[in-house]
Length: 66
Image (cartoon, rainbow, N blue to C red; front, side, top):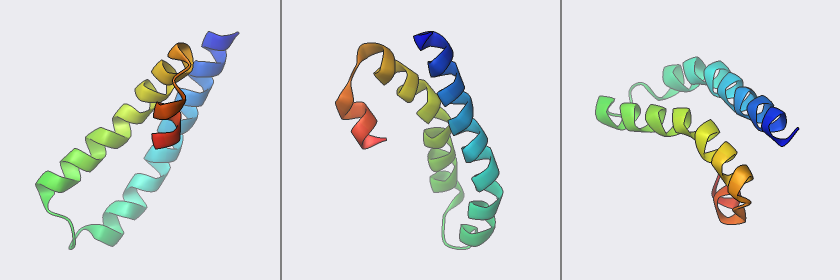
C-alpha cells in the first residue's frame, strides 16, 4: 500500500512538473542561462525520486526541503 501511494505521489509530481515546465520556460527564457536551466530541470526531474526515498526512509528533513 505504501509503495502504491509512493508511486502515485511520484507520478503526481512528474505531472505537475511537466505541466509547469513550458510556462516557466517561456517566462524565464531570457533571464536564465542555458546551463542554469539544465540544472533546474534536472533538479525538478529528481524530485519524485527524492520524495519517494524520503517516504520510504521516513525522512522528514527531505520532505520539508521539497
